[in-house]
Length: 276
Image (cartoon, rainbow, N blue to C red; front, side, top):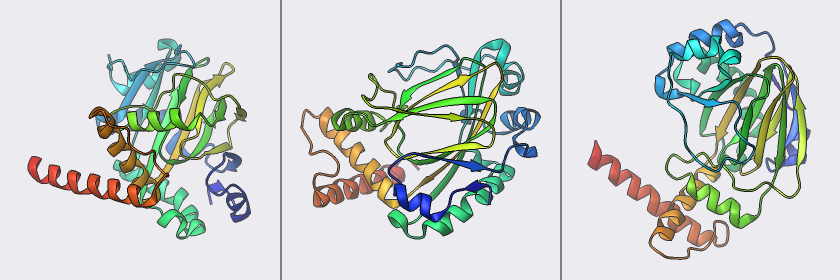
């Protein structure tokens, strides 16, 4: 078992709060610097994102610079270039899919029918130079973030419910869930190789690379039907606000949430047929 999380630890936090853990992927041949260079050039270019390493903690914009050289070159020169790189949806690569499944199969078995069971698995690699910052943001998913090389400080906290809802609604398109303000109360986790943190859905987090070494992290993400319904409700509310309406926030009415999620499901299915 690569991710060392037991039933008691999970039950104590109920998938709602962050917690630290250890893992056994440090030194894995699939996550070495050389392997990541090859992987970055092997996956579709649309799965590679680059950004400057000197971003501020608050950077509420979705602007992302275009790649100006091959992903492999950026990974090889990440310290000199002062950029960080994210490799996303690594489950499209057979070797990485096998690793993702090796890590999440035991988690899946442990969770059982939690929130309706795991419906989607994803993997991400983040590689960053010393001093790099990932601005404060929210995510929809359950996330086990594993530190492979270097040291990271992960600062987490919950934002005001209204800001949370507006931010999640903004992610309907290609938004990154970046925040215009920080949580009032935060907690810090220092991650060294072999350490990890569980980041629960909707938990605001900022990540800083500490020390003089390159940082490499591996993120294991999973979805559930409960989370998927929430994402659809936020998408519906986003569209309703664009029409000048004031929709009820997610979670305020189970009946209303079911209706909105159903409407979005029908609309997306119809749109898919029209465009296919």
